[in-house]
Length: 181
Length: 181
Image (cartoon, rainbow over all chains, first blue to last red; front, side, top):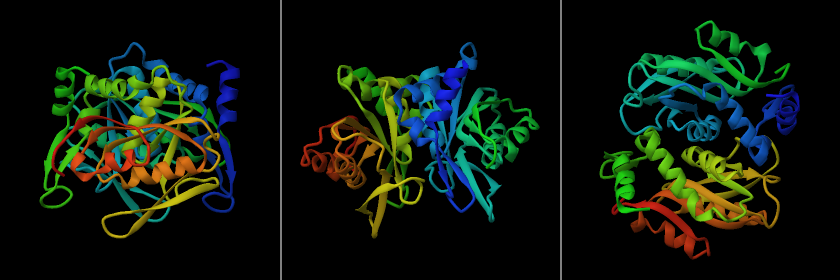
């Protein structure tokens, strides 16, 4: 991506001070999603490194990862897998617990969503501490997926999520990095 | 859509008996989403009628409407607007209440998500009673949108949702109809 495109993507992301609580500068991707050229650019750039790879499925993390994941799956010609908060999927699932700021939650996917050995691209809008992404990696690998990469529009590198995934041998592809939380 | 394609889409939707409660036959779209040719077909057919129209934004209803809405926005070259459950959007919102089986809930969108007068395509995976779709229509029209159509993969016509939207002068475009609940 050239530097003008990168700067345009950065500028399309709205900064909301003190959300969801005082002292946090929230990176709001809805302004990028709503900007047609920037949405197309983000989807193209998330997809570009895998143009010559055989992608079995694109997996998106609920809920914002569904928007980008659906678009990337359409662009690369793959099927889409939703990784959801617990209790939302109607068929037999596999579950994994992950840490939130206070306590634990669980996410799940359908047990029959992938074939062992297939290559999966994991998509979310943003990586911060990497807790949900790591949980998604565990779910997918538990069913035999090879994770081609985890892809994010936004990385907050100081929170360590990308390093956490790389330590699991998951390649990380992000488009825009912001310092701070 | 020819009848072989239509039959293929129908077959790709899994039926889950007694979910979420006894007596309900749940139409599970995840098997269609995960099937690459069927996902591409559904996105193409949802988008096809609007090929020569100027679409300002595609609005998707949380959460499954995000998957198809993101893909349709990518296909038609529009930006995407998330219509979310309350409390999930960081900037100034507009809200509307809608009825659930027991009680009320609210959904919201960002107040600055659209320009008055623009044409918006509303997307969700399924229309049943039409309660959430009607709420989404109210939000979008309240901000001055012209709703080009509401598009769904699945219609359950006995539940009356499509008629409810048509009574509001919203054209309804659905791909597959199933009798019963």
